[in-house]
Amino acid sequence: MKDFQIQGINHIALVCKDMARTVDFYTNTLGLNLIKTIALPDGGQHFFFDIGNGDALAFFWFPQAPQAAPGIASVRPDAMQTGNIATAHASMNHLAFNLPVEKIEEYREKLVSKGVEVTPILHHADVPSGFSS
Image (cartoon, rainbow, N blue to C red; front, side, top):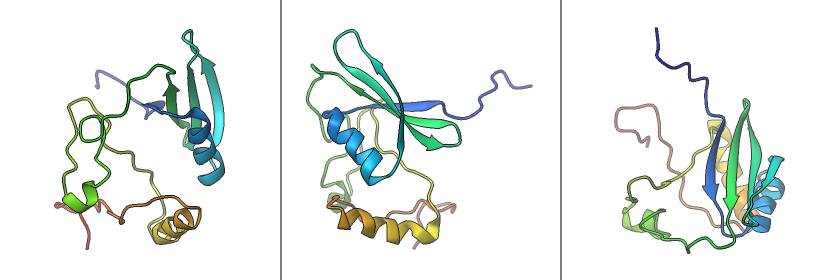
């Protein structure tokens, strides 16, 4: 018998710099539904997007949050060129959505057409090396 009955992810919470821009991207660009917002005592917000299967992607917006620290708490913008994807312990390195494999290039092009800066496609295939060619 398992000690814990984990049934999936309820939500993953990230921190955003600009709540309006974040809501716009996830609702208008990706088409996710904003399903809940919680006002925080400091004037900030905690808000949630439905990502399917009863799971959510959540964000905090803290008005007085420290500035981003690329290369420490997140991947550096030039990581794909330099190969340096390391981030600090307890940081959020990246988030990956499950998508139909045959749609990945189409979706990438849709993002580009909407003015979204994208990286090359890196597919973590179910192979021992973790990469497909």
